[in-house]
Length: 576
Image 1 (tube, helix red, strand yellow):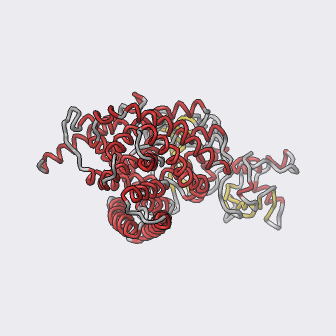
Image 2 (tube, one colour):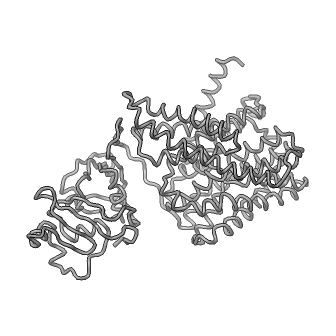
Image 3 (spheres, one colour):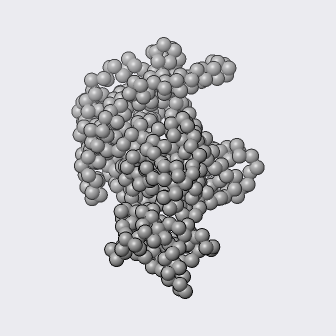
């Protein structure tokens, strides 16, 4: 095939992949299944009759595409979320994968009538939750899940590849006789996690340092700069140094994305948008290519056995592994049910199934075909039913609709500022209130309101209505406080104690407590709660400082403002 024909073919497949995504929501089918279908229809046994059987090339392309997906997923996983769920996520990504692999492998050996080691190898290949599938299904499900649940699924799926790779390579070594001892296998696991993690942290710290100091004059170069780090640093270091030393390149890429995404970087929105596009490109290329690699006739030949293995994996192995590994972490029963159901399989198992083919493992073609069929069943059944299961379990809520208007700050230098778009829910604290009554601190300004298709220019008398898209400009450090004002189920803000904020002197004690979500102090009477902060300070003259509940109120930089300091630990605050 000439280069021109190859470019044309790639363009056509990319267009078909993008076009198929439009039917995902209408058909209720996960978009990754549609991408796979495009590849299968274009393949050697489909309408396109494109012959593609290079497993080595497929493995290489799949690794690069998965790296792009994992890097974007890491960028969107905050360090705060990692700190919140790292213990259960680590348990699921290690012990959980081991238990799932063991139970599924035993079933596979019995169903396919193959030796135990080959059965365990198949179980190891499908034992991990796939990051590409999880990120794809969660972002296209139309659901807003609880933060702890979403973070657990994302961190687990992004970090469990080392265990799956370790089990797969170890069993291939045992079957082919290239692994000599248990100590050698244990060292492989330690190197996979340790070296991959260290390389990821190192590159993740280097990238923002370089991005923030290079001072490029053209904004379009910043996404390319980060892409260069992705291609050079994450490719050369993560897949070069980490692979040479035995580390996990996938883990390195994911951790590097987390560290970089949690750092303050210039042109942040543009960089994130660009990598969102590269992740979609990676998904389309990855799943269309894997579809080309499949042979439907072979899948039909293993359909009965594959269905039994998939049932054991989805209904028995994954739920048992989740129940046992998360026992110390006090998840609710419906959360455990959801975690059990969203153990999606995707690109990683199919990519890992190529390893036995390349190593010449007996019955490796049967293993590959069975794995492919299991992935199809998992993606269709679990991915398609995720919104239904969430509604049945009363978990999450519909995701906010995308506004017809967007505003952002694309800063080419480090600045302390953000423009955040909030979709107002009926139960949010600020719903139905006029802007003048919100008592926002200095450094926060409502800049624009989108109501349906109409733009509302904000004034003090403007009342916020449910469904409004409210654009708020603010100092970056204040976002956790403002987030809770628009959250229908707010949690205590994670801000440091003794934070000093400036407020307008005309706001009342009651408004101040409403802003922070704190109950009024018991000793305050109605006259005190309605009194303005400025008048409280005037009554306290000449000290010019007064204490009300958890707050120290001091004179501001001018007569129109007062400084408010909260002397209670933020972690102990509870919403009012």
